Length: 157
Image (tube, rainbow, N blue to C red; front, top):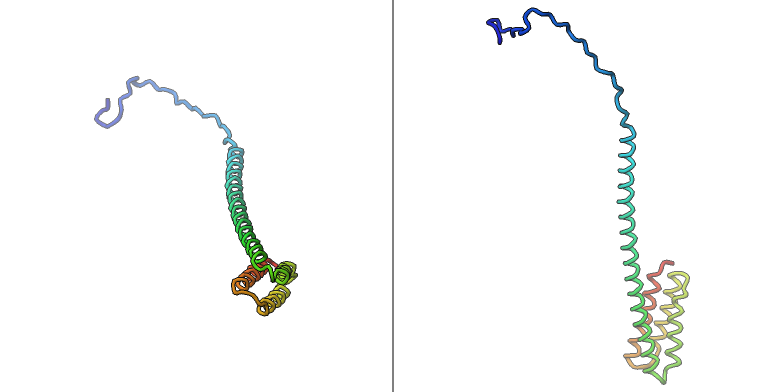
């Protein structure tokens, strides 16, 4: 097909073909801004969903922790009630004095600040030290007053 000069032979011979001047239509560049806008909206929505899920999980964890603390407090309070019941049943001859001490111990919970709670606690400890009874009763009184004081101390004044 080619000649010795490296040119392609024209099969049509010397017929001159007019050069076609074809111009492509000039289409405007498509506006993709709405695609970008929807993409951003979808991205923001997914981010918001992830944040809501994290917030919900944190709230559920906090709720579980608070529930466990509450149940633990109920358990401790139940133990205190059992201790009070045992003290009242065991020492029939000193019931009035023990009851007065228990009422005074519970008054610690009405304290408006830490200093007042400490003052009431020290007063109760002095009274227990002067109390004459068996060692088990004294130990129970010390334990009970200490438990009540610890509960009050953990409260935010």
